[in-house]
Image 1 (cartoon, rainbow, N blue to C red):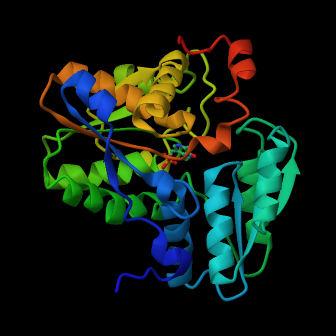
Image 2 (cartoon, rainbow, N blue to C red; image 1 turned 90 degrees about the vertical axis):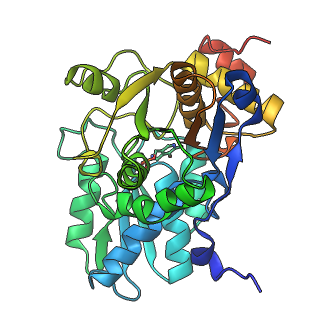
Amino acid sequence: MDIKDGFIGTVGNTPLIRLNSFSEETGCEILGKAEFLNPGGSVKDRAALYIIQDAEEKGLLKPGGTVVEGTAGNTGIGLAHICNAKGYKCLIIIPDTQSQEKIDLLRTLGAEVRPVPAVPYKDPNNYVKLSGRVAQEMDNAIWANQFDNLANRNAHYETTGPEIWEQTGGKIDGWVAATGTGGTYAGVALFLKEKNPDIKCIVADPMGSGLYSYVKTGEISPQGNSVTEGIGNSRITANMEGVPIDDAIQVDDHEAIRVIYQLLSQDGLFMGGSVGINVGAAVALAKEMGPGHTIVTVLCDGGARYQSRLYNQEWLSAKGLLPQQ
Ligand code: PMP
């Protein structure tokens, strides 16, 4: 018998997929951890589950309680699903610049969604900070606080990292991933370095994010911008503090789009934009390391969430990002 225990029991244990076209091109094994196969559809199901379990274990969240977060993306989706599965309420605070599609989806999943004016992080009414205050003022509520809550990276230290180690039989030369909160990169890097310090751990960074310059020069100085969602940062989160980083690779949107269209047409994988940055960086690392190496990255979520943008020719054309046929 091999039966999963509900939604919660289905989170994690995702396959590791050989990306054939990119592996053949580079002579390396380019492997993608299939996080889009989590039951909520993204890598964030793991963090959402660990954040909620950690709050339960600490006695901060009791039956009927509310999970509050400031997020427009996959974390909100993961939290909403897990709240349903565990009988909690979910309150999501998002900037009012977010698409109606995202608001509708979160509401369909049962979350209460509160759009608030979009103001910079330094403003006390920024949606992330506001979500922390709202949680504090409610009874039996927690603030998920994904950027600075270490339960996030712990999910990946305890599950994603060991799964990758086992699935490759320990034969892995490089780990590369873009960071939003940094939970995925950090948890896996911490685990793999303990197993074998020679594994190269590389941050992939989109344009407009400050981590590439931070790794290269010690200063956070973002350049340019990116249409990718859920990745890039201009600060070092608690999840990224004290985490090994051997190098950083910057990938622009042209390359990310080329990669996701190749994944679709040659590998049969319909992926989101951050996967373009991840696999683009894995290919760059493969070229740097030379043939014969095994490089693992993350397939964070699927392409359906981005159909009106990354898979819409008119939208891409307006951005000057149409892939070459
Ligand atoms: N890709 C996508 C599509 C995401 O939503 C996220 C989460 N923000 C990431 C990558 C990065 O994950 P993490 O927060 O663990 O760094």
